[in-house]
Image (cartoon, rainbow, N blue to C red; front, side, top):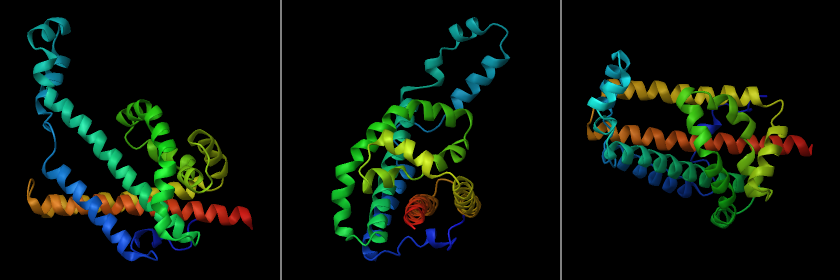
Length: 248
């Protein structure tokens, strides 16, 4: 079942307190711009790629590595950058969850002023759960970059179950998997559509604006911030829809 308003997920400012959504978007935009413009560490992995290609062509891997140590190709600064990417993703995820909480309050006719209390009281369950699956998830995404699109629908209701039904993260994961039956295909279609629109806009921006320019960082930062909120608004709408259907 597709949402009755396919494009409602893009109306991120459609809250009872519009200014709250705007402020959150501006904050997410600032985080993304800062990360793009001033990335910690070294985001240049060209030396590692050259090293890897040469190693694959070498007849004796051991002799090659002894003559060309891995540390020269993959530096501490590269590691710092990779860790900073994890921190950036985590921050954007938390921003998205906070928007989800505000939107959920709106849909349930609860004052948005209560959203911070709900968020900070229950977020620790999701942080604990996310930390426990972080490494397996990164390995999966590393080998199959878009595999998460097939798994996310099963967990789509988990934040709502944690924040609004006060379930622990592990119980909510099981319940989400059960309650998304019959909805997973439409969730997949909606997520794929949102991702496709982002990718097309991203390619257009990369084509129009100069690489490394402030304008590129500003526009790309805005796109990332906006689409994070779009995805979590879609998640909130889906949780509300499933809850309403179950109560009918």
